[in-house]
Length: 260
Image (cartoon, rainbow, N blue to C red):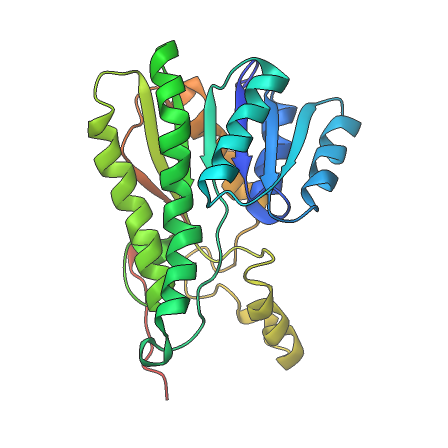
């Protein structure tokens, strides 16, 4: 497939998980990729891409700061001569505590990474896309941002903010040719969710992971990457301002059992 041929893309959180899978798939489909992560594991992502014959450069930095966003924009322009799209995927799992045990520092950290990071991608990339007459902005939200009981309160609120950002910014970019969307993963096995999987395996209950969705399993990063690459491509030219679940059907109901 070559749906991303000649596209110059920035992908944050590309050191592992969904970001790495998307960077690898995008490159295999013809994109030139700037892979961004706070961890230097992003260099491994780039090495895997170049070893397969793709084009990519690594940027180690914090995508949730003005400096970090400016740096990855500059890197893409320097390496590839411009930008056609950005995937603001970097995120964290939140404080991991009940709401009454969270403090302001927990909220500030979660919102900074999960919501301000995507805002900065919009702020720093959208003007360039507008100037050239079009492009794509994608952000990682979550099914937890759609309904309750799929994540902690700070995490869920931060992802609901990403969904709202996609919806409101789509209209602020009216008639510019720039599209903005969010993808909402369900339970995906990544570094962020690894403790969930590790606990289940230690208890011998790994076969129950993901069973509350009608597909009856958890997802894999590569499955989110497929949707991400579609939304970054011209094949999604009429998809704008949307929050699209990729969750095995979980958000069709969000089943819930009272904790005992």
